[in-house]
Length: 356
Ligand code: F7E
Image (tube, rainbow, N blue to C red):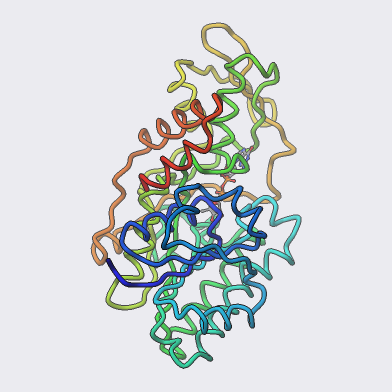
């Protein structure tokens, strides 16, 4: 047993549930924080966590700094993982103020609470920074690449990133940024393109939905890894002998179009692309049926063109390397979605968190 106590904000999300399960297996006492009321949180948390003796759920909001200060006082955590965020890049263009409050000032609330606490410097603080910080900076991107954020989501995360660095340098806080590239899993919400494609492909091919799957920018390239590798990386960043900032990613990049091809191939269908831009479609190469259509309403005001990690620093200093490949990710997501489509969602999320 580690005997350590961790506090995870944003515990109901993909990373929060997987990290909580990972730390519980390491013998941590885990407090999971989210803005949901307990009944709503219970609906989002896998029973593996809810039934675990060393896991407790807490309702609360990172925009309330005094609440965070009292929480640190009461729980005396050894580690804080700040995963709470408005995480939808497209939506951030519609809600820039709320995004700045949660993704920017929310982080400052944690840092101030730690600075003002007698034991704050002994608490290890992890900030979920993002490859979105790089925006349209040329790939591959490492810790040395200048940031070029392209959305209200990313500009708020930029403020948070530099606040972490500033509080580390100014006040000696053990505060680290994990600059994580896209990471997905069977628990990913269909608000994100990978899960939308997986669930959409199963729906379209089942014949239940006659409508093709509608997607936005097919040319965007992302460095997609498996979330299980990334929650392990978060923990490795906080167990490092000093606070620092690390890029975590696979080093490989694929377009949205290539991700769709891989998903349909996993389901036994070869796609045939036709047309360009807003008129592009993908047909089943055998039947000719239209399976995917571009919907310009899904284009973002500005999109990040290509993300590809150079995670050499994490490999050299933490010994972190992703264990799961792109093919593993696609297969895991497709299999889980097939089980879920047959009514086994709770089973899927429990299997997923326990495997993380
Ligand atoms: O979009 C394009 C879209 O929403 C990926 C978050 O976890 O990772 C995530 O941010 C790409 C973009 O993720 C659709 O335009 C095309 O180019 O899956 P996404 P994201 O924006 O990269 C980073 C690292 C984070 O930090 C974020 O919190 O796919 N795309 N068609 C689409 N995207 C969506 N969502 N839906 C579409 O229909």
